[in-house]
Length: 297
Image 1: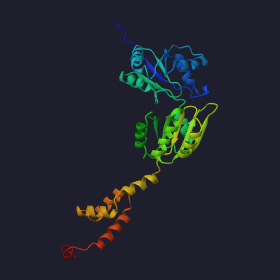
Image 2: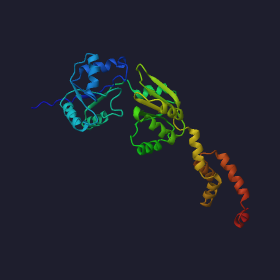
Image 3: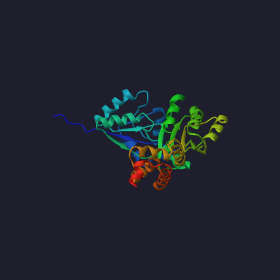
Image 4: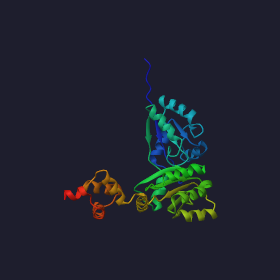
Protein backbone atom coordinates (compact mmCIF):
# COMPACT_ATOMS: atom_id res chain seq x y z
CA UNK A 1 0.00 0.00 0.00
CA UNK A 2 1.39 3.39 -1.01
CA UNK A 3 2.26 5.63 1.93
CA UNK A 4 0.42 8.97 1.98
CA UNK A 5 2.88 11.80 2.48
CA UNK A 6 2.09 14.48 5.02
CA UNK A 7 1.83 17.95 3.54
CA UNK A 8 4.48 20.51 4.28
CA UNK A 9 4.01 23.94 5.85
CA UNK A 10 4.47 27.42 4.43
CA UNK A 11 6.13 29.76 6.94
CA UNK A 12 5.71 33.51 6.36
CA UNK A 13 8.99 34.93 7.64
CA UNK A 14 9.40 38.71 8.10
CA UNK A 15 12.92 39.97 7.53
CA UNK A 16 14.58 43.19 8.75
CA UNK A 17 13.53 46.41 6.99
CA UNK A 18 17.00 47.85 7.66
CA UNK A 19 18.79 46.87 10.83
CA UNK A 20 19.70 43.17 10.73
CA UNK A 21 19.41 43.04 14.51
CA UNK A 22 15.63 43.25 14.16
CA UNK A 23 15.30 39.66 12.95
CA UNK A 24 13.65 37.40 15.53
CA UNK A 25 15.16 34.26 17.02
CA UNK A 26 12.15 32.29 15.84
CA UNK A 27 12.59 33.50 12.25
CA UNK A 28 16.23 32.39 12.31
CA UNK A 29 15.18 29.00 13.72
CA UNK A 30 12.59 28.50 10.95
CA UNK A 31 14.91 29.66 8.17
CA UNK A 32 17.51 27.11 9.32
CA UNK A 33 15.02 24.25 9.60
CA UNK A 34 13.00 24.48 6.35
CA UNK A 35 13.74 22.57 3.16
CA UNK A 36 13.52 25.59 0.86
CA UNK A 37 13.36 29.40 1.06
CA UNK A 38 11.27 31.26 -1.52
CA UNK A 39 12.58 34.81 -1.89
CA UNK A 40 11.36 37.86 -3.77
CA UNK A 41 14.94 38.65 -4.82
CA UNK A 42 17.46 35.85 -4.25
CA UNK A 43 20.38 38.26 -4.72
CA UNK A 44 19.10 40.37 -1.86
CA UNK A 45 18.11 37.49 0.43
CA UNK A 46 21.40 35.59 0.01
CA UNK A 47 23.16 38.47 1.81
CA UNK A 48 20.87 38.01 4.80
CA UNK A 49 21.31 34.24 4.81
CA UNK A 50 25.09 34.53 4.54
CA UNK A 51 25.17 37.03 7.41
CA UNK A 52 23.42 34.54 9.69
CA UNK A 53 25.25 31.52 8.19
CA UNK A 54 22.07 29.86 6.93
CA UNK A 55 22.73 27.22 4.26
CA UNK A 56 19.30 26.35 2.91
CA UNK A 57 18.42 26.16 -0.82
CA UNK A 58 16.99 29.39 -2.21
CA UNK A 59 14.50 29.86 -5.04
CA UNK A 60 12.91 32.95 -6.55
CA UNK A 61 9.24 33.84 -6.19
CA UNK A 62 8.30 37.31 -7.40
CA UNK A 63 5.68 39.31 -9.30
CA UNK A 64 6.90 38.21 -12.74
CA UNK A 65 7.10 34.46 -12.13
CA UNK A 66 4.44 33.92 -9.45
CA UNK A 67 1.94 32.10 -11.71
CA UNK A 68 4.40 29.47 -12.92
CA UNK A 69 6.43 29.30 -9.70
CA UNK A 70 3.38 29.25 -7.46
CA UNK A 71 2.28 25.92 -8.88
CA UNK A 72 5.79 24.50 -8.47
CA UNK A 73 5.95 25.54 -4.81
CA UNK A 74 2.50 24.09 -4.12
CA UNK A 75 3.62 20.74 -5.57
CA UNK A 76 6.64 20.75 -3.26
CA UNK A 77 4.48 21.60 -0.25
CA UNK A 78 1.98 18.86 -1.15
CA UNK A 79 4.96 16.51 -1.37
CA UNK A 80 5.92 17.24 2.23
CA UNK A 81 8.51 20.02 1.90
CA UNK A 82 8.49 22.87 4.40
CA UNK A 83 9.03 26.26 2.74
CA UNK A 84 9.84 29.69 4.17
CA UNK A 85 8.54 32.71 2.28
CA UNK A 86 10.58 35.93 2.57
CA UNK A 87 10.34 39.31 0.86
CA UNK A 88 13.10 41.85 0.33
CA UNK A 89 12.23 43.46 3.65
CA UNK A 90 9.48 43.31 6.25
CA UNK A 91 6.38 41.11 6.24
CA UNK A 92 5.83 38.99 3.12
CA UNK A 93 2.38 39.02 1.45
CA UNK A 94 1.73 42.69 2.35
CA UNK A 95 1.70 44.61 -0.98
CA UNK A 96 3.72 41.63 -2.15
CA UNK A 97 3.22 38.61 -4.50
CA UNK A 98 3.35 36.32 -1.48
CA UNK A 99 -0.34 37.09 -1.07
CA UNK A 100 -1.08 34.81 -4.05
CA UNK A 101 1.02 31.94 -2.69
CA UNK A 102 -0.79 32.09 0.65
CA UNK A 103 -4.14 31.94 -1.20
CA UNK A 104 -2.95 28.89 -3.18
CA UNK A 105 -1.91 27.15 0.03
CA UNK A 106 -5.32 27.73 1.59
CA UNK A 107 -7.02 26.39 -1.56
CA UNK A 108 -4.91 23.24 -1.28
CA UNK A 109 -5.41 22.85 2.48
CA UNK A 110 -1.73 23.50 3.17
CA UNK A 111 -0.86 24.85 6.61
CA UNK A 112 0.28 28.50 6.68
CA UNK A 113 2.21 29.75 9.71
CA UNK A 114 2.83 33.53 9.98
CA UNK A 115 5.72 34.69 12.14
CA UNK A 116 5.50 38.14 13.78
CA UNK A 117 8.32 40.54 13.11
CA UNK A 118 9.45 43.74 11.39
CA UNK A 119 6.84 45.70 9.42
CA UNK A 120 7.37 49.16 7.95
CA UNK A 121 3.73 50.20 8.13
CA UNK A 122 3.31 49.62 11.89
CA UNK A 123 6.71 51.13 12.71
CA UNK A 124 5.85 54.28 10.75
CA UNK A 125 2.34 54.49 12.19
CA UNK A 126 3.31 54.38 15.86
CA UNK A 127 6.01 57.03 15.35
CA UNK A 128 3.84 59.34 13.25
CA UNK A 129 2.04 61.14 16.05
CA UNK A 130 -1.28 60.57 14.25
CA UNK A 131 -4.17 58.49 15.67
CA UNK A 132 -3.38 54.76 15.76
CA UNK A 133 -6.67 53.36 17.10
CA UNK A 134 -8.18 52.86 13.65
CA UNK A 135 -6.26 52.94 10.39
CA UNK A 136 -6.49 51.78 6.78
CA UNK A 137 -3.52 50.38 4.89
CA UNK A 138 -3.77 51.37 1.22
CA UNK A 139 -0.40 50.05 -0.02
CA UNK A 140 1.02 51.42 -3.28
CA UNK A 141 -1.07 53.79 -5.39
CA UNK A 142 -1.25 53.45 -9.17
CA UNK A 143 1.48 54.95 -11.36
CA UNK A 144 -1.31 56.39 -13.54
CA UNK A 145 -2.46 59.83 -12.43
CA UNK A 146 -6.12 59.18 -13.20
CA UNK A 147 -6.25 55.87 -11.35
CA UNK A 148 -4.32 57.34 -8.45
CA UNK A 149 -6.75 60.27 -8.14
CA UNK A 150 -9.75 57.92 -8.35
CA UNK A 151 -8.42 55.78 -5.51
CA UNK A 152 -7.67 58.83 -3.37
CA UNK A 153 -11.19 60.10 -3.99
CA UNK A 154 -12.58 56.75 -2.78
CA UNK A 155 -10.86 57.16 0.62
CA UNK A 156 -11.27 60.94 0.84
CA UNK A 157 -14.01 60.76 3.48
CA UNK A 158 -12.40 57.99 5.56
CA UNK A 159 -11.99 59.19 9.16
CA UNK A 160 -9.30 56.57 9.85
CA UNK A 161 -5.58 57.28 9.56
CA UNK A 162 -4.47 56.30 6.04
CA UNK A 163 -1.20 54.48 5.29
CA UNK A 164 0.45 54.34 1.87
CA UNK A 165 3.74 53.00 0.48
CA UNK A 166 5.47 55.12 -2.13
CA UNK A 167 8.60 55.01 -4.26
CA UNK A 168 10.83 58.11 -4.37
CA UNK A 169 10.33 58.80 -8.10
CA UNK A 170 6.53 58.98 -7.60
CA UNK A 171 6.49 60.79 -4.26
CA UNK A 172 5.98 64.38 -5.40
CA UNK A 173 3.19 63.51 -7.85
CA UNK A 174 1.42 61.52 -5.14
CA UNK A 175 1.72 64.34 -2.59
CA UNK A 176 0.29 66.83 -5.08
CA UNK A 177 -2.64 64.53 -5.85
CA UNK A 178 -3.28 64.01 -2.12
CA UNK A 179 -3.32 67.75 -1.53
CA UNK A 180 -5.75 68.26 -4.42
CA UNK A 181 -8.13 65.49 -3.27
CA UNK A 182 -7.81 65.58 0.54
CA UNK A 183 -7.12 69.24 1.12
CA UNK A 184 -4.34 70.25 3.51
CA UNK A 185 -4.00 67.55 6.19
CA UNK A 186 -1.31 66.43 8.58
CA UNK A 187 1.09 63.82 7.23
CA UNK A 188 4.14 61.93 8.44
CA UNK A 189 6.62 60.84 5.78
CA UNK A 190 8.74 57.98 7.12
CA UNK A 191 11.81 56.70 5.27
CA UNK A 192 14.86 54.54 5.93
CA UNK A 193 13.17 53.07 9.02
CA UNK A 194 15.70 51.37 11.35
CA UNK A 195 18.59 52.46 9.08
CA UNK A 196 21.34 55.02 9.62
CA UNK A 197 19.42 57.88 7.97
CA UNK A 198 16.02 57.10 9.46
CA UNK A 199 13.72 60.10 9.13
CA UNK A 200 10.19 60.99 10.21
CA UNK A 201 9.00 64.21 8.60
CA UNK A 202 5.87 65.30 10.50
CA UNK A 203 4.27 68.12 8.56
CA UNK A 204 1.28 68.98 6.34
CA UNK A 205 0.59 67.98 2.76
CA UNK A 206 1.17 71.54 1.49
CA UNK A 207 4.52 71.82 3.28
CA UNK A 208 5.55 68.35 2.09
CA UNK A 209 4.88 69.39 -1.51
CA UNK A 210 7.02 72.51 -1.05
CA UNK A 211 9.84 70.47 0.47
CA UNK A 212 10.01 67.86 -2.26
CA UNK A 213 9.73 70.42 -5.02
CA UNK A 214 13.17 71.54 -3.86
CA UNK A 215 14.65 68.31 -2.45
CA UNK A 216 15.04 65.01 -4.31
CA UNK A 217 13.45 62.21 -2.23
CA UNK A 218 15.71 59.28 -1.37
CA UNK A 219 14.58 55.83 -0.20
CA UNK A 220 11.23 54.07 0.03
CA UNK A 221 8.54 56.02 1.87
CA UNK A 222 5.68 55.17 4.20
CA UNK A 223 3.09 57.96 4.17
CA UNK A 224 0.86 58.29 7.23
CA UNK A 225 -1.98 60.67 6.38
CA UNK A 226 -4.51 62.10 8.80
CA UNK A 227 -8.05 60.87 8.21
CA UNK A 228 -10.89 63.27 7.57
CA UNK A 229 -11.96 64.94 10.81
CA UNK A 230 -15.39 64.01 12.12
CA UNK A 231 -16.17 67.70 12.50
CA UNK A 232 -15.48 68.22 8.79
CA UNK A 233 -17.56 65.18 7.87
CA UNK A 234 -20.47 66.46 9.95
CA UNK A 235 -20.12 69.95 8.47
CA UNK A 236 -20.27 68.58 4.92
CA UNK A 237 -23.11 66.23 5.76
CA UNK A 238 -25.17 69.05 7.24
CA UNK A 239 -24.40 71.26 4.24
CA UNK A 240 -25.81 68.57 1.95
CA UNK A 241 -28.78 67.70 4.16
CA UNK A 242 -32.21 69.30 3.63
CA UNK A 243 -33.37 71.74 6.33
CA UNK A 244 -35.42 70.20 9.18
CA UNK A 245 -38.47 72.24 8.16
CA UNK A 246 -38.47 70.62 4.73
CA UNK A 247 -38.33 67.10 6.16
CA UNK A 248 -41.00 67.86 8.77
CA UNK A 249 -43.38 69.08 6.06
CA UNK A 250 -42.55 66.12 3.82
CA UNK A 251 -43.19 63.43 6.45
CA UNK A 252 -46.21 65.26 7.87
CA UNK A 253 -47.73 65.20 4.37
CA UNK A 254 -47.16 61.43 4.37
CA UNK A 255 -49.22 61.12 7.54
CA UNK A 256 -46.59 61.13 10.28
CA UNK A 257 -47.44 62.93 13.52
CA UNK A 258 -46.11 63.63 16.99
CA UNK A 259 -43.22 61.62 18.38
CA UNK A 260 -42.90 59.44 15.28
CA UNK A 261 -42.40 62.50 13.08
CA UNK A 262 -39.91 64.15 15.43
CA UNK A 263 -37.89 60.94 15.87
CA UNK A 264 -37.76 60.27 12.13
CA UNK A 265 -36.36 63.73 11.31
CA UNK A 266 -34.00 63.78 14.30
CA UNK A 267 -32.54 60.39 13.33
CA UNK A 268 -32.18 61.34 9.68
CA UNK A 269 -30.39 64.62 10.44
CA UNK A 270 -28.58 63.33 13.54
CA UNK A 271 -30.00 66.22 15.54
CA UNK A 272 -31.40 66.32 19.12
CA UNK A 273 -35.08 65.39 19.26
CA UNK A 274 -35.81 68.38 21.48
CA UNK A 275 -34.47 70.70 18.80
CA UNK A 276 -36.61 69.07 16.11
CA UNK A 277 -39.64 69.21 18.44
CA UNK A 278 -39.18 72.98 18.91
CA UNK A 279 -38.84 73.52 15.14
CA UNK A 280 -41.97 71.47 14.53
CA UNK A 281 -43.83 73.45 17.20
CA UNK A 282 -42.91 76.77 15.58
CA UNK A 283 -43.82 75.39 12.19
CA UNK A 284 -47.29 74.36 13.39
CA UNK A 285 -47.87 77.77 14.95
CA UNK A 286 -47.22 79.41 11.55
CA UNK A 287 -49.37 76.94 9.61
CA UNK A 288 -53.08 77.90 9.35
CA UNK A 289 -55.38 75.17 10.59
CA UNK A 290 -57.83 73.55 8.22
CA UNK A 291 -61.61 73.61 8.83
CA UNK A 292 -61.48 69.93 9.81
CA UNK A 293 -58.79 70.59 12.44
CA UNK A 294 -60.78 73.52 13.88
CA UNK A 295 -63.91 71.37 14.15
CA UNK A 296 -61.93 68.64 15.93
CA UNK A 297 -60.89 71.17 18.57
